[in-house]
Length: 261
Image (cartoon, rainbow, N blue to C red; front, side):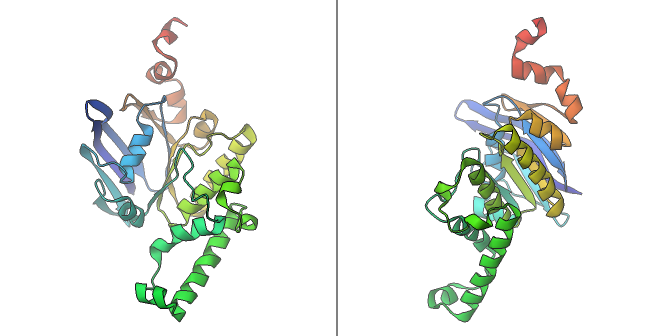
C-alpha cells in the first residue's frame, strides 16, 4: 500500500532550478533514505513536502487509509494535520519554553475543546489539558527525556535537543515522519543510539520514515531503499548495496576525477 507518491516535482527560484522532475515512490512502513552532496536539493524536497515551498510544477500525493490526496500547495499546518511531520536540519525548538511545553504545543493540533472552553477554563478544558500532559510525559519517557520536562529547551545538551525535536514531531501523531539530518553533530556512539531509536520508532508506532542524512553509517544500516539527488535531480535509487557501488553516485560525491583515482 503506498503512502507517498511524488511525480515530476520541480521547484525553481528565479533562474535557479533547485529541484527538477523528482519522482519518489514510498510504500507504507518503508524507511527510505534521501542522500546527495551539499546543495543537491534534499531539504528543498522536504520543504515542498511540508508546504514551506509551493512547487513550480509536479504533484505530491499522500495516502491515508488507502485514499490518496494531493497535498502540494497546502499550508504547513494542513499538511501536518494530514499526518506528515518533520524535524529540521538546524534545530528549531522553542528554546525559551520548557521541554514539556515544546511537546504540548505539537499535541494541541488535535484538541477537542473550543475557544469558549479555553477562554473560560471550563471543566472540559482542564480535563483535556490533563490528558495532553500525561500523553506528553509518556512520549518523553520513550526518549528518556521525562526527567528534563521542566528544563528550558535551550539548556539541553545538543543530542537531547535533537531527540526533543523528534519527540515534538511524534506528538503530532504522524503517519509519515521526515527526518532532516537527525545525526548531524553527533558522535559515533550517539549516532548508533539514534539509529536504534529510529528503527524502534518505525516498528513501535507503525511509521513510514523518509530520512535525509550525511552519516552513511546511519543510512546504510537502517534504510531499505535510497534515492540519490544531485543538482536537484534523482540520479539513482535502489538498495544500499546497489547505491554504494553506483558509478554516478560515487562521481557525485567525489567528483569526476574518481575515474582517474
